[in-house]
Image (cartoon, rainbow, N blue to C red; front, side, top):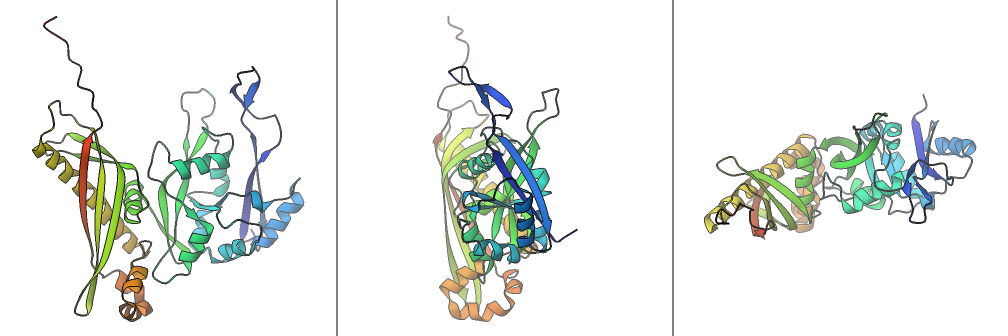
Length: 354
């Protein structure tokens, strides 16, 4: 089979979509009918030309909003694809980049749950988050390309997966799109995929996570959960003689969302809960850092940070950067401030006194 498969998903201007409800005027409300087609070629341009010949309409790239990299192509290298996309003058550089965790045709066959088209569904998840992850961020084509060619900085992209959307129906369950992980690259090649907790830690460390939730446990094993609306990170380069380390300070503020405590919170309990959340966040951050190092991906931009702070030091590292990257100490301090209790309503109990 030729080297490239190009898959397009578009919306047919047709009233033949699946009915999903009715309007206030009594007219039927239908999902837009999606059209998925693929073509193959020894080059991306050849695959595009074959698609144009087969397609009943021209592929107008100015309307394109999302570019999905297949997982196999991502492993082999994306430089040729990115170079091609950057040269397409009609393609907007602010297209979203996502990586499909399986075959692209399988992923693109998912049906939107809340929006009328697949593209609108993905854009909504990227920009607003979803029920599974409310700390999502995104990568644009121009950002991905810039990080791919920057020394000491590797690119990343959200991972697009599909899940079964409705198991209760007797008909075959639909599959719906979901984004809750991040793909990390080494230069132009996919190095690995972070899990959900590692992805949240990654977004926090990149100063990309402004809202989210953290789950932990008390000393007695009781469940704790907080929602945060502020996560700020500062980092500094620490040098001692000819050695260097990078130090991160993570500050998170939020509200206590769930506890099994029926008593009023004391200062001592609050301190205990903050410590529990700090340990949980720090554990996930260090696990994420180890995962990135083991996969040989500097998506945190440690090298670029050293370059910006001490060019002479960076010049001594850059010829063998990935070896130094695996050895440089990265220290993380986490400070969690619980600003209040989100559950302000008192627990309901029967009035024995009538």
